[in-house]
Length: 358
Image (cartoon, rainbow, N blue to C red):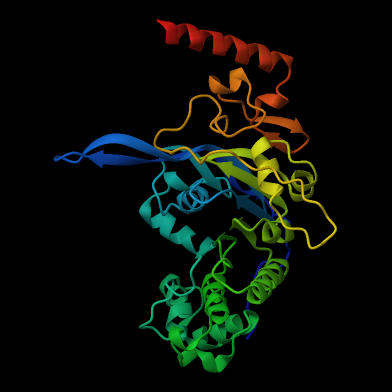
């Protein structure tokens, strides 16, 4: 059986935008409730004004410390979480403006590969049901062709046809993640959210899964948002990289640009921790002081100023603008302001100080 896919990687179809996904000023806040009556007493700003775009057929890596909001960004993009503000455009369509029925019809195009292959597969279902359930529900292929279709998908993901009647507990971690990839691929998607898909696997198996994802992208023109805290993996698989800190995006650029010349002090500290396989290489490690502030009570001004070695007075009062420092290289840091932006920031700081004295 021949499975039909879009096999022209990175080339938009007629009438389609080059950017498959555009995220504008996305916010996701979670309420903190307390007291006898469970009233809201605060807010966790898990995602705070995040904007980026992903070109069709490419991979964007999203990195940052644990708890910075990476996974929440991904789940909100897929509308697994409701947004607080902002917009998410997929193929030019606002996902949060869709009715329930229209969203259901769009679902096959947007798939997810979860972090833990052990808990993301139902132990009660055989593999044919796990991979084929969504295919049958959305009518991806006629029922008469379903068995051949599943065999084809499994083969492309490195699984054998006789695996269909086995259960998840009979597979290794790497094989289970291949099953998760096959489940996503079977829906004939255009975009796949990879939420730390290799962090629970051995290093040797990680390489196999990363190579499989690359092969499938080249073959079917898939677009990935690859969430990870492993910078070496992100550098290998990504075309562009976004760096998050405490719910906000602090830097975004092409992979080569951001790894060769990181602009934000947090990015510089993060990248200085990447191990180099050379015993004679002396690492210029940047050690951050203190711990990450609470997203329920973030610092005023720049969120990173409490840990930044380059902190200036203005950083404590004024949140930096998201600016394009170089062509395609965006950063939110007062160190890269131009004269006009510096003047505006100074004025805002003086006003904040005056208000604080009143």
